[in-house]
Image (cartoon, rainbow, N blue to C red; front, top):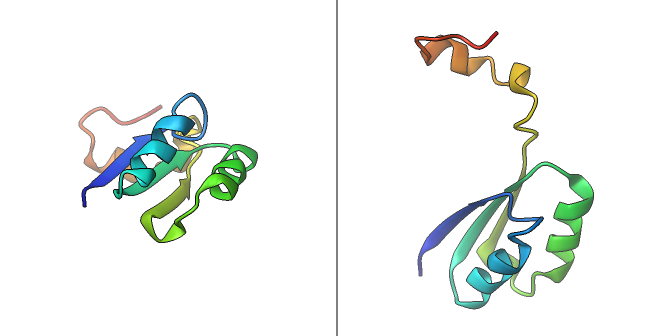
Length: 75
C-alpha cells in the first residue's frame, strides 16, 4: 500500500482521489472548500485509507511560518 497526497483532490481530481482509495492506497486529500470535502467524505467507502485536510492555501497570510524559512519573505 502506498500513500498518496492529492492537492485539490475534491474538485477536478475527486475521481482520481476515489480511484486511488479503491486501489488499496492511503490517500491524503488537501482541499479548500468544506462543501466539496464533505461531498468527497460522503463518497469514500473505506475511510480508514483516507485523510481529509482542509487548507485555504490561497490566503498566504495564514502561512507566516514560510516567512521564517524563506529568503524572500511573503508580502
